[in-house]
Amino acid sequence: MRIALVGAGGMASVHAGCYEKIKNAELVGVMDIRQEAAETLALKFGAKAYTDFALMLHELKPEVVDVCTPTPTHADYVCEAARSQGLRGVVTEKPMGRTLEDCERMISACEASNVPLFVGHVVRFFPEFRAAHTQVKAGAVGKPAAVRTRRGGGMPRAWEDWYGDFSQSGGVILDLIIHDFDWLRWTFGEVERVYARGLGESKLPAQDYALVTLRFKSGAIAHVEGTWSDPGGFKVSFEVAGDEGLLEYNFNQPTSVPLKKALHSSGETRAAVAIPENPHNENPYQLELAHFLDCLEAGVAPSITGQDGREAVRIALAAIESLQTGSPVTL
Image (tube, rainbow, N blue to C red; front, side, top):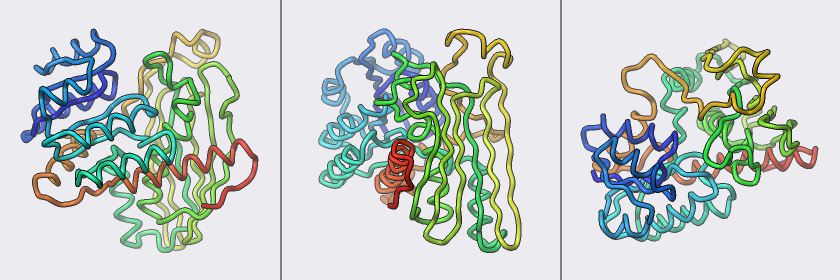
């Protein structure tokens, strides 16, 4: 399938590398408003560079468009792609959108054109999270009661520091721990109530932190911790406790400078978006993209839909509302 990539930043580079290894994929175009970035990434993978999205769609007529741009821009690209001739599917990175209205626009545009929409909630394809999901569903811990997840490290640095702009990124809640919100909803069902504390729009330089409590309709409770205030490297962990067992996982990926130096320096020590490692030959990003292409070829629905992406955003926005008001939010 002919793939056109929107964006030429860190995540777009990851996706481009994955398509190179997927047998039924060919990256034909890369579009970015920064001409040099588009040309650099396109040259690396033998694609054509563009700064005009409509022109790329017109000239290349891709079968799949993959959107890897800052969150507030997803909706316009997805909606325009959905109307293009010959398109078979659209991928958008998480978070699906900055607002629920953006999410609804994307879902409606793709449904109107009968184009499948896939949201890149890649944690479902990480082997440790998939294994835990499978075991919980199989009853390994009995009835789940309490869940704890933790994710994060230092605040990432990207184009025009858009991660540090809460109005664009939604902070650590919307951009980072939305990964956990999606996995938790997939594993434990619908969320009933949300409560959050954290930094939010505190304007602290290059820092953010949140602790979000989710109550599920099943009665289980999850404590979801996310941080862009830990200079000791990217860390992920979870713990699932039920009346018959406990599942636990911890991973620390040191990637940054020593703690003392980081705390007393400027933001120059910030790195690009952390891409969690895993021991498998095929990385989870490759697995998720290959899954979507295989679903398109087989004519079946992908395992993650626009509705899933929207619900993860709904949980995240409820957490932001709770943080800002100091009160629980019922979904």
